[in-house]
Image (cartoon, rainbow, N blue to C red; front, side, top):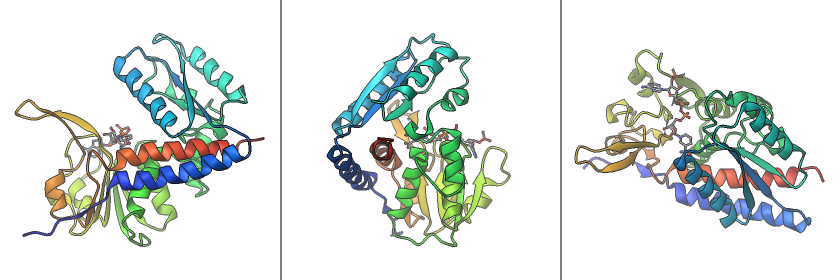
Amino acid sequence: MASQAQLIDGKVIAEKIRQEARDILARVRAEGRNVHVAVVSASDDPASRMYVARQCADFAAAGIDAAVRELPGGATEAEVIDAVEGLNRDGGVTGIVLALPLPGGIDVRRVQERIRPSKDIEGVHPQNLGMTALGRQRAGPSTAQAVIEAIDATGIDVCGKEAVIVGRSQIVGKPVALMLIERRVTVTVCHTATRDLAGHTRRAEILVAAAGRPEVITGDMIREGAVVIDVGINRVTRPDGARRTVGDVEFEAARARAGWITPVPGGVGPVTVAVLLRSAVSAALAADR
Ligand code: NDP
């Protein structure tokens, strides 16, 4: 029987990070201070609203105050920026999350640029991304940090290894590349213009799949023994009509070749949630008194 990759259990990693968050929260409270996160939402879409409500419930379950600063689905860019700047000025607010999507016509980056960097717990402000590029990370994007946590959980020394990242987005591919370069990993970043994707992925000792394309990484694209981190979350309908969530990696086939692999769901997803909680309490601890 072919050997199977070891599973990287996102729930176990998430629990470790949640404990770190609890410890930081205790220090914040010991100083007589509080953590308060404001989630700016401007969407009438029921799925987005549900997501925001769940995010607030996650914060609350971790003992973090969170409230939605709700704007109408037709809000303008100026109105969203006004709301963000009000929260920047509000001394009681220690962290700001900008829920996406924003109404059509709003330039998300322009809004992100207006979040005070010290309150940007999602790590989307250019200054925080710049700090990541300089290797002086404050709050890096949660998903990218979660990828690094998942790699670290294997206990493998990554220095000098070959990593291939599929996807070059602002919140995943690029920051993961920067974080791995900082650890002296040899990094290749692939995207839709990449020629011979499989030629790259087959070289990868560490493969990070963040393309948002269901099972685009097939088993034969995996190097024997690789660490495979699947960031993708894709809802698909199977031929039998059943709806399922799958990653960007063809899981069973990849598992037969990889050394380590994250499942979907239960891999990077829960780690990302935990990282955001930790970033929220860390921002409060670092906040000006
Ligand atoms: P984006 O759509 O912003 O970026 C996708 C990237 O993948 C782009 O750079 C794109 O290339 C590249 N790409 C797409 N298709 C291919 C392909 N066939 N071959 C090679 N490259 C390809 O996605 P995100 O980074 O926001 O998210 C990626 C995935 O991660 C999604 O499934 C998303 O749901 C999931 N996600 C999961 C999170 C978690 O907590 N687990 C959190 C955030 C996202 P190009 O630039 O050329 O267009």
